[in-house]
Image (spheres, each protein chain N blue to C red):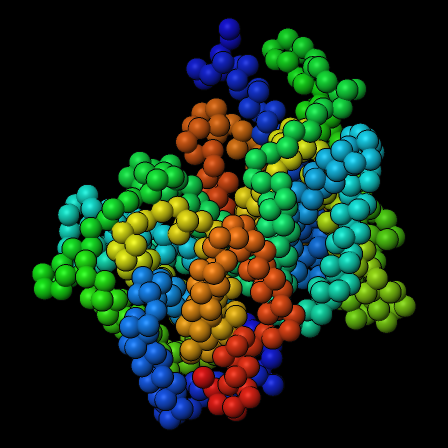
Length: 326
Length: 295
């Protein structure tokens, strides 16, 4: 959406290029080195939170940045995957890999249902429908007994990954989270650079034309939606294990707003933007936590400033200055 | 005590009335959203926050200026509407050339700011606002007691909604508005000041939200987050009704309020979600909404 209307002066996205340009390898290497080195300097739990949200934001960006669909209900996938993963690990006593898979599969299924309904309308209606359906899922989580209402599912055991890796060790957990993030990131990167991703972009730029060329736009949109929901679920399930907690915060609409904020701040439709945005927003919340509800006010101001002054986001603007899409 | 389908009539009519009251708010709010969307192509996410501001304006008028309910009914929409006009002039008007979604994001940010600021100042528990003395008490209708204030809310909402419908569909001013919704450039070329019309329309839509807020203040308490969840339900109402028709918004608003009230009687667990379920069904059967058309 964002890029669609500004395409005249917007940075030519990397997607137009047949091969991955060298500077993107470089940026990717910088990101990997940063996240490998960071836990030796920064509190790892904080970094894991940032990584989970970065994956969440990247998954969200797949929709808004490359299909032009603004989902305002992505918290539903993050949160319900978290609940199911926590329930599987704690009540059913499943190992972490099965718990994460359960959560992710839940999100995929929900994504299929929500997506199939929401893609029936476009633009602004799409945002309202996803928001409303997510609110329905929120009320379901609030009322159903297994989520334990306001308490959430607490003290979720992390367990042994594949029976080998002891996730109770913070560093082990950290590198597992990093591996999950990188896998998700690369999957998204691969998707948007594939022929499938090119069709998605074509639909974003001009849906009627894509349809007239014989592409079934709805099918492409639905697949993209399910993929995005699934990866959001992966982030949510992982997050539940990291914090050993699944709570209503992750299903609430404020969380859906937060992921929009991260992606907008980092740069809609940029490869690395959501990661940068997620790290900044998580850091900001960390510092502002003692200020209580001022966090909301600050988030609101960031929204307003982003929309009014730099719609490309931080990474988008950087890419524009460097004349290299990031 | 008489019963209908095993439910005491008293409870049934009580919930029907609550449904009508909620329906009034849905109708006024979705009407405002529809009017704003028609001309500005922006979904006003801060509509819920502006509804809350209306209730707070009434509260402030009473606390600071000693002006009661009746004055609040007049002044609060004006003040909040003016606030809306300032927002439109300073921020929203920069977005008209861009994708519609930026308007949604901007107004979402504004809603966060407004609700956050009020919550910092007044916490998240409600502030009481008493009924106007003229409207306390109720009428005994035989099968139930109808509180005067609640009857007043329903009647006034109907008048406001139908009045808005009349102005838009049946007057010269309304014809300019509808023409500008269809083709602003052409209307501008005929010498009508479209930008000013857009500004006033936004102000009017916001004023409607504030009016709903004043009406709600004595029923629900004055609470910084009173509009936050409501706006999501109103979005669902708008999706169900479709934003193409003014009358459609009104009918859908009242109708869904009643359906929600009835759900509270027969299957209370679903009362929070029934509107969203209806939305999902409508999307399956008639994606453009009951009164909408594809644009």
